[in-house]
Length: 376
Image 1 (cartoon, rainbow, N blue to C red):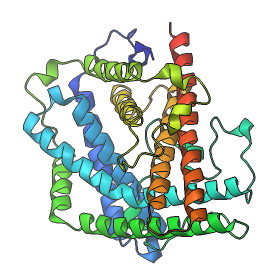
Image 2 (image 1 turned 135 degrees about the horizontal axis):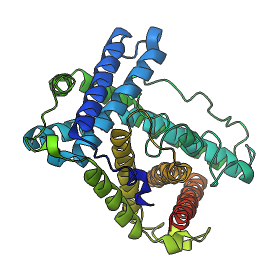
Image 3 (image 1 turned 90 degrees about the horizontal axis):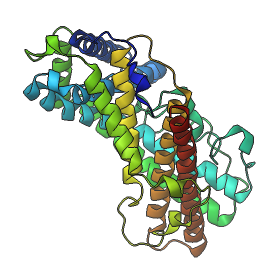
């Protein structure tokens, strides 16, 4: 990626008022979404769709406020920003888990159908990476480069709500059907617990403290005394540099091959921790999101559209989704006393999702290399 995203040809400095205005706008969106969420009953059946949209907007604003506080922290009151950021991260996580579990189950059941021949294999011409129809990968293009396409509105849908397009399991093999039932049971339980936790979080004193802080932010942004004379572009450029440095640390040479046997190198490990190869890629996804938020501050209302940047973000979204789905399959396979056919099916499913991870890395590498060539 090149520094051109920061528009260096424009000699006009971007004043701190821009970040103050952006934070006030996001705080206003946060409060508007909170009011809508409360008016629609916080997930009651009568206003489920409106409440879902409100929770999505609530989480979206929380993430943007938190990311902006991180990127431009030298211009903001340190004690205030450092105390608010972790609270916003807590809220964002609480609002995102329920839908994440639902999307994970949808992805895994779709993959089971595809692997069992119960659903057609997705056409390669329409998907940049081998992604199951209806999975998070195919939905990622509807958002900008760093966020889940339908993330966030867990606290609004009831715990019994099912994905709208759950594939038919009628033609699955016995092992696949039992594996699907096991995944359904485990992930639905996790989703129900996440739903309860989100409702509890939104009713807690901790959340009310966050809402009060955001309400103050909507009218007053605590800048440092030196902020009025500062230029935002160097801080935004630093966010871009952190992204570039993180990408430099990725094994892009390995990711440049469409098939990488290292995807399964830890496949039989008894360690239940996340896959050791994934963390650097998840970090790049986070930094890409922070870079995008910085661009929103510099270009209010008219962020430059970069197709390659969006494609890279979509690939990282698919990478995250496939990685989490593979972990869920591996966790289910560790269930005691399951039938051998079920365990075998879950192993195949785990391998399939790890190859989805590799396909996403390949797509990211292709997009990033095109960006580097076009700006060299």
